[in-house]
Image 1 (tube, rainbow, N blue to C red):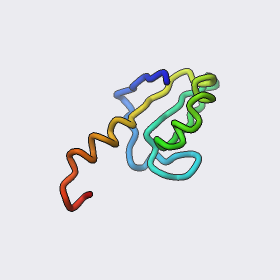
Image 2: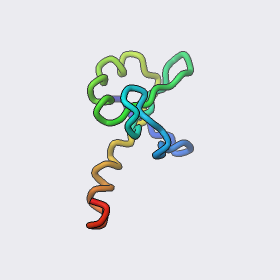
Image 3: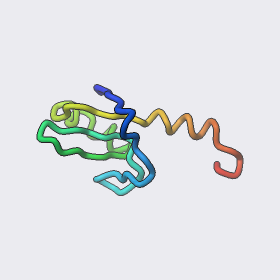
Length: 76
């Protein structure tokens, strides 16, 4: 997957997957100027199609493993 990180606009917990409503970890910018948001699961599922239509893909799925490793026992 082509990945472009845009530090000016990180994804937050308020950003939701357009497919299922889970927290979004991928932002796909389309040539038309629109964008799609996906959770990690749907981002992987639709990866082949997204690569064909995306101008940029902001992939923050790395935060998933980073969060689990640093979460306190109460947060797990």
